[in-house]
Image 1 (spheres, protein in one colour):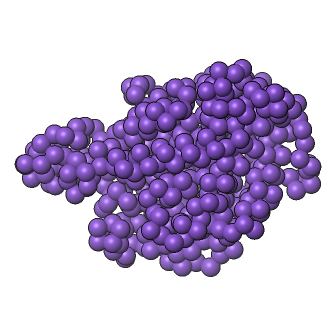
Image 2: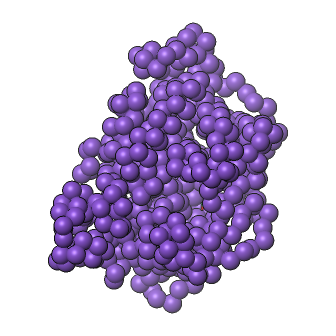
Image 3: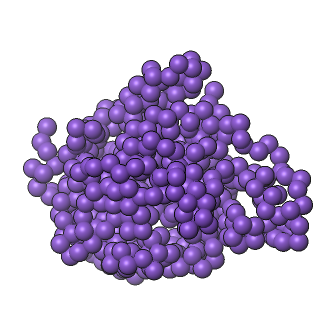
Length: 467
Ligand code: BGC
């Protein structure tokens, strides 16, 4: 098999069709024209409908090995019951394209996907995650490329171009590549502009996302979903409108505009619940205050991911997005089941007690993101989930493979650019978390590395329970 580096950037029949349509003005025009022109390539409205999804054999093998290490046969059986769920393949550094000693490369995965699909449509979930100055407000997933013009050039030529060259191979034409675009990047530009690193990174994030969207679109069978953080980050009215504006500016300033975007993905690698079943009305008065004014919500009216996706959909359509955009939610770790899950709404008349006793999210603070203790696997991957029409959900997906760490709890030397973020240290009390402890699990390995104790916890606390 040839390697990504060895491939010249081709003009496959698919790329030729897209480029010809672009040259004819069908796609490069204003968004209104884009929406009314015939698409150069027939993209599905919802790529998950009528398709299977790629099961990553590497992740399955990790799960099977994990099951072999536990003494509790019930827990082991539950692990094996999820071993064949589809999870995303992360291109988290340039070396991941070719493969490393820890991970197979992209071509290997695409070949496996091709074999799994047979003659039926198959979704291949891919994460594009290597922007210059990556993870500007945190350290655990700091990347390899500096936020400089030279870093941007490497992002284009050593990262996006080789990925696109592989996806563009004719043998992968029938795969539906669903790409999660650059987790946390644009959200960091909305809320973390007091952080000098995020200011420096801003132009590269915008240019990089635009480049990725355009190049991936030209492949012809890629469905890009832009990362839109989660309700506990962007739900406040100012953050929500600011992010809608930021997303629209980036998309509309890119070569193909909205044509290159299938929708948005929320909760990537986070643990914010799909629903807070006992806290459903932000305006309800309890103990003299509205529920949303409780310390836990801090006036954020979006209590969960169903709220945020519905809110975001409306904001994006108001910004000019076609009504056909869809939402994905990462439910891999937002289940919050297990013995500590509340089973009824609190009867307290004290507002904070009422919210704290009612919420299924057991974190110390909604901003805690690193290996949170108590989390569980959430909804299994589901196509067009029912019950939330206002959220316009294309699917629940497992973007973060359960069992892979969010960051190390102590400093661990590595060649991946990753650093210790104190949010991953259980002994740390963070100002950003209202002075609370992080609630992170101890003894965590580097981000992306297998974390057995976390996986055991996630399976044990799955909600819905695994049967
Ligand atoms: C890490 C990546 C990893 C991904 C999935 C991210 O937090 O930075 O290296 O591939 O999680 O586990």
